Image 1 (cartoon, rainbow, N blue to C red):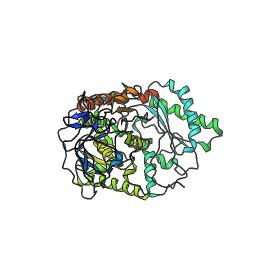
Image 2: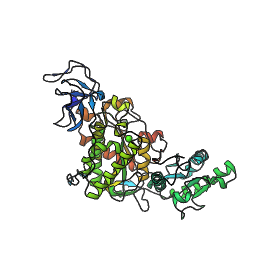
Image 3: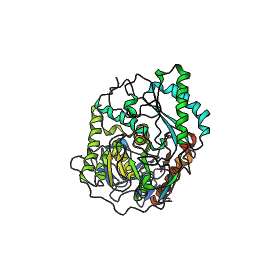
Image 4: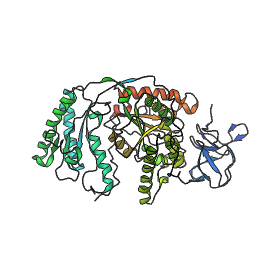
Amino acid sequence: MRYFVKINEKDNVAIAVRDLAADTEILPGLVLRQDIPQAHKIALRDIPEGGEIVRYGVVLGYALSDIPAGSWINEKMLRLPPPPALDDMPYGTNIRTDLPKAPRKTWMGYKTPGGYAGTRNILGIQTTVQCVQGVLDAAVERIRKELLPRYPNVDDVVAINHAYGCGVAINAPEAKIPIRALQNLCQHPNFGGQLMVVALGCEKLTADMLVGPENNTPENVVVLQEHKGFEAGVSAIMAMADKKLAALDKRLRQELPLSDLLIGMQCGGSDAFSGVTANPAAGYAADLLVSEGATVLFSEVTEVRDGVHFIASRCRDAYTRDRLAAEMNWYDSYLSEASVDRSANPTPGNKKGGLSNIVEKAMGSIAKSGSAPIEEVLSPAQRPTKHGMIFAATPASDIVCGPCQLASGIGLQVFMTGRGTPYGLAAAPVIKVCSRNELAEQWPDLIDLCAGPIATGDKTIKQVGEELFSLILDVASGVKKPWAEKHGLHNFLCIFNPAPIT
Ligand code: CA
């Protein structure tokens, strides 16, 4: 039985594979000085006060006091190092050309005009403003019951409800982010190019701004203030939905190359195993997808910030490196304006799961980007123009990263978790990968794939990565449904708005 996992030969700490008792001899001559909780760090050598604490071959921090070998190292015992400098980061020094070959070359998707293919066939009803949600939700309930059964090729009807649209400083420079997010959500590949908008009539985010004046027509937009009361509003929405559903019902899946597939990766509720098991397995699956031309987004700026130099080394050119630095700089300023920094990221659960600080969390988080070259860097909610591995800047918050990546057009999200979260999206399926066996046992009807056997030595990263690759294509093709989709677990779409609310 394995006691601990050490990642890099330079590491002077390792993490406990399970709860370990004091006095256990984990290596010849190395005896634990105290109980060590699962996933927490063990000092493998004596570390003097001020000495480096090294995991992933990277300095996580400096010891605040002497730490004898065999001690438990928790988040209170180390000082955070400064973040890596963003000026003149070397680029192009780690461009991999020998990615592992994908065992499958095609999938079954819905071809969508002018973009990536859909993984589901959904009527997405957009909203300009939160005010319409009550009426729209009532209409959607009736659409599901009365109309949807008549259109067997349509999977679902989803209201794109959000908190933006009015009471906001819509001309503030950073308002471009939420506006772009909502504009791009209208174009999501799963909605098949069928525009449908419910507006109020007096909001700041007008239908013109949302879908463009050319699309702001009675065929695409219901304005509630133009209808005579609740029943009339609901009837107008249903009449439009009926037409859009009839058009969507003609969509059929077809065999497509992986280059028509766009997916996103994110992690949430991470623990110290996330960077050893689930995220590296996701990274391997990403490498397989990219090897056949698929596009994979990874995000979460504060969880890349401390590993940004590793990502820069994978950028093909100075422009991409500069875009990466610009997104990091923007976020540094965004945080500093509110008198915080990246150290505001880790949660109490992350720390309970053995993650001492943001450096340790970031090293685990970037593992999900695999090893392919970085082809492009996107601002929040932008759509990719290139194929391959792409950094799409978003907040790390699960419920904000999700809508940003949806706006970028992901047909599916792969979500790695260590502590466990039932997170889901209504407009695209979410595959849940857990980092340790105990969570898979605790949540058998929420976790889709367990990467825990990598920590115990029962499976390799390659094996779990190949399983995940296959699961991604099965879910994208509609052959399998992940648990969150089966249960209908959907989080509210929290649109990233760094601009003021009025
Ligand atoms: Ca997250």
